Length: 118
Image (cartoon, rainbow, N blue to C red; front, side, top):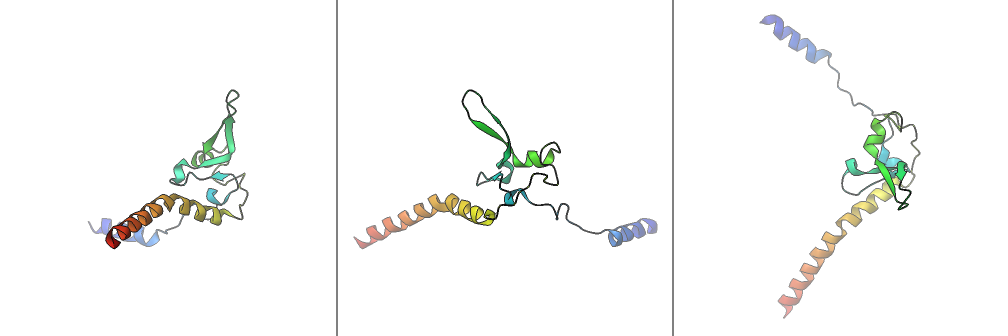
C-alpha cells in the first residue's frame, strides 16, 4: 500500500504540464481561412477544395480536416500565410452575427416606449 502512495506522489511531482501546438500558427490568422461565423469546426480553408464542373461552384475543405491531413496543410500549417487583418475580420464577423439580436432588442424597447408614451 505504501508503495502505491509513493508511486502516485512521484508521478505528480515529475509530470509537467504543457500545451501542445503552442508554436503553430492558427488557421484563423491565415489568408485562406473562411469562418462560418458560428463554429470553428465548420470553418473552411480556401486553399483546398473541389470545383463542380457543371455548376462552377467550389466546395472548400473544412479547415480542421486540412490541418489533420499531412498531404494538405498538416499540423504544422505548411501553406499558412498570415492575414494582417484577421483580428479585424473576426471582430466584424462577431458584430454581424449579433446584429439581428441587437436590432430585435432595440425594436422591442422602441415599441414599448411608444406604448408607454401613449
